[in-house]
Image 1 (tube, rainbow, N blue to C red):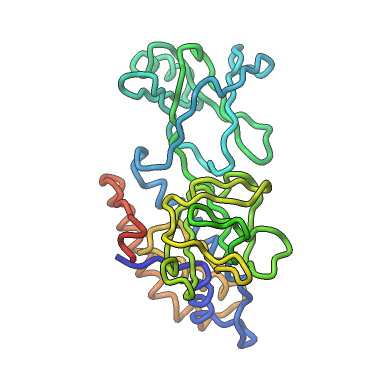
Image 2: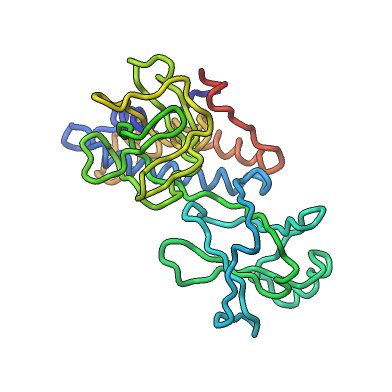
Length: 319
């Protein structure tokens, strides 16, 4: 299996493959924007082709929804739930109050289809819809038969944060990292987010040769406090604490696509940069390899429509 490539290393590799028309290299910020676009394109395809039950999900208590009698659909009031910022697209919602989870259909189905299928889907006719009006986060609403619902599960495609690298903050320890997200920052390269929960699910690699126990270690972030303390919790504690003073341990985010497709993201980013400035020689040089890797990606992800996706244990596979 291919080893994952950090955002910082990706920028170097893109510049190795793609020079600008003045004979220099692109700035890290320019390259990171192109990499973010490439990673997001591949990530969405990869997620859309996975089976629903291999997607990320959250479990929600119906008590966390809010009754809104002023917002109606088909003459009925709506129970609304505010979605976390990291949810980009919903693939499936299930009523998990049953012995066997039961799908709650989406309101985009024609009413006659809802009426026909409701008998098979639930004991009561209910569906969910998107609620507009939130500029940062989305909301969903449940219509009809909501009183029978006590808990539900949302399968979703994650909204990826932009990639960056920087140095850990002062409150970093073996169990958590304080991300380098403040602006201005003397050590961070790339855009950062202060929105709570934005980095949940993100992968981070610690890079500190002075501390061999953590150098090269990869962790998934399970929380993010956002503008409060900028802290994220590791999914597994480190064997040693990163340096926070006087020097600080560097880190870099890792694209959240399968490592075997990291090279394709690099090629797509380099190709995009060359397209912008009319770098025909670079485009010609990259075209054949980009096409080949794209075919491998398409083939691999098509197979996963009928196969359980491979689970990547990031640390075990790459230590």
